[in-house]
Image 1 (cartoon, rainbow, N blue to C red):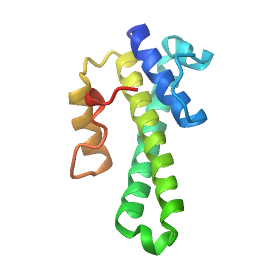
Image 2: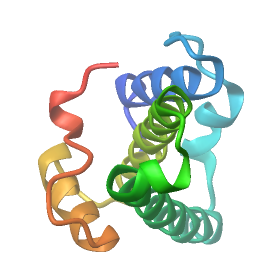
Image 3: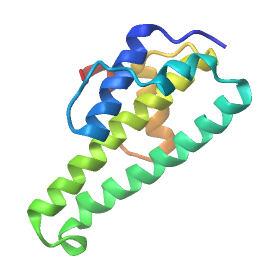
Image 4: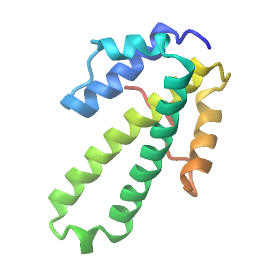
Length: 134
């Protein structure tokens, strides 16, 4: 297993804080710092759960993007929910990327985009992590 660089942990913290608190912050929670201390078993469970969560988020986003008016008729509520899901998506996909790095997989953000696109069944690049700056 590999040590995740500090800049990756800080970027994950910004995505997490944006998702949880609505504002990006460089404050790194202790659980993020502990990623480098995860056992192989914990890492496998976390990776599996993160992939499942990303698939679920992708499905929810697709439903709202294509059938949003039927599901949530009020446009402002629908847009707010979509924005919240996108924030969670950014956080979870970057968390999964961080787990990959810790497991020793040498992957760029662009290569990870391709992997996640395949894993979630999307027809387009959905994370675009390399172009996002939190």
